[in-house]
Image 1 (tube, rainbow, N blue to C red):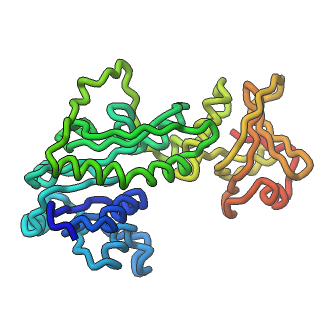
Image 2 (image 1 turned 45 degrees about the vertical axis):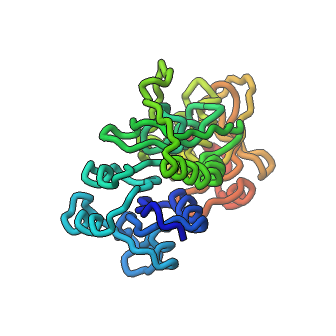
Image 3 (image 1 turned 90 degrees about the horizontal axis):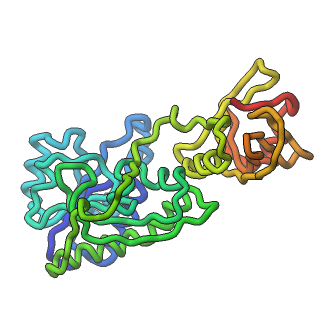
Amino acid sequence: MKKFPKIVFIGSNNFSLYTLKELYIKQHNIIGIITSPDNPFFKNQGEKAFTPVKIYALENNIPFLQPKNLKNHFFLETLKVWNPDIQIVVSFRVLPKEVWNFPKMGSFNLHASLLPQYRGAAPINWVIINGESKTGLTTFFIEKKIDSGKIILQKEIGIEKEETAGELEEKLKKISGSIVIQTLENIIGNEIKSISQKKIDSSVLKYAPKIYTKDCRIQWENPSIESIYNKIRGLSPYPTAWTLLFFNKEKFVRFKIFIVKKIRKTHILPIGLIFIVLSHEMKISVKEGFISIIEGQIEGKKRMHIKNLINGLKIRENLFVR
């Protein structure tokens, strides 16, 4: 194992885990891990409550901490005992200065966008929602202002026209380890030429704020079929676009939509009307044509292909969404 530098890895989700595995496999000296507290929703259900990063730490006997309060005295004292040379952060909450400023070689973060564009909690979702054709990964030194530190490295990739947020995340995962390791090696070798984000020409900045359930509701009245289509794929599979499915204007249920295709066609039909064609196609009328559902989930049921979803419907006429 490489003894220098001593690394503390900070992260929680599956995106974090992919990078952590790459560092561990390449035998970098990970002396400790900081991850999120156990999920209280799964209390007393074993590993269900644990973050993927915690599970990996347990499997590989790596010391870890799960602070609720990042300014907690015990947590900060333990960090001092670990005495890391550098900290690597991937998909975690905002760190206080007492944490990110502690290592002598600094702390750097991996962000899933081409900074300074798409600063915020949900860059992978927002680049697709906004119909971008490219995105990438950025490593940067952590400073006081969120996602605004000096850029170390960037890697650009293209976004396919039908790609979902989940598919894009998988692509970014596969290159995350290499850019983090290259960043680490450049810092160790004193070969970095960090760039201030203020020096990058970005006349119009786009942001990636956290997405809440209420933000995921589909606005079928949107005049652009492209915008509706991009929102659905940009929220798939999580946190998931949704609408209300009405039966005869009386009963309604929540309807999550994961995969769709768009059909441009001129019509004079009311917006939100549902057509079921031969028990294998469900189309929803929008201003510029139709959104055809491929995979969805009706409240109380599992996610399924549209053929199975239609087969489970008792009512197939006078359906609409709103």
